[in-house]
Length: 125
View (spheres, rainbow, N blue to C red):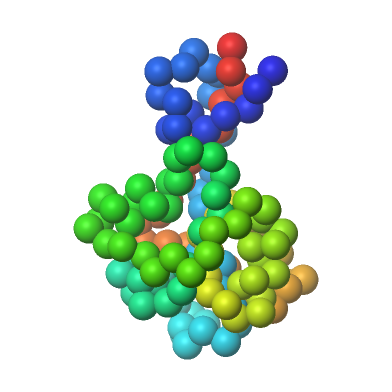
């Protein structure tokens, strides 16, 4: 059994499990209002982006591209925990699927993006 991102392999025969929402994960030092409902992708291009690479397809990069935007990629990492530590140290922001409660345990802020970024998770048949 193999779990995959259905957006990365649209022609594969797989069973849909769920849709995940990706959120912006920011250092607490970033100057965004605490009552902000969502971060516009255009606003995020002003800051260094720590790209969490999870395979051949990146939902966040696809969303930036479809909006005609180019993020300022500072580094590319393959581990979500390392990515969170880099964000926590103020080296940039990331966009990833995270639980809102995570910001209670790290020096980070988690906000939805505008537009919303999602991915479909499935099991390869």
